[in-house]
Image (cartoon, rainbow, N blue to C red; front, side):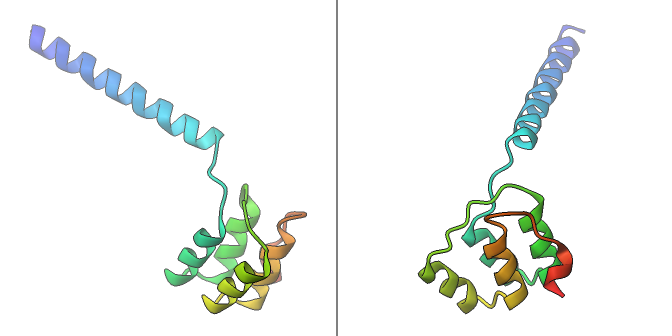
Length: 98
């Protein structure tokens, strides 16, 4: 009986700890970066989904000339490329990718 109580207490502790980590992650989402966009493209994620991801949360993009060239070299489409630059000033719509 004592072993079950200890096991139950450990399970409750683990569950509440995990919930705290998830809650913290949801409250402080990690900004999307240049490398994230390139990774999404390399994973064959479609342009529309990439645009939605860019517009749905915080971003930390570098739009220096070399960084934009790296995006182009990675196969980022003109629509996503444009959305990427526009996202620095305002949200963009998924329709701009079509």
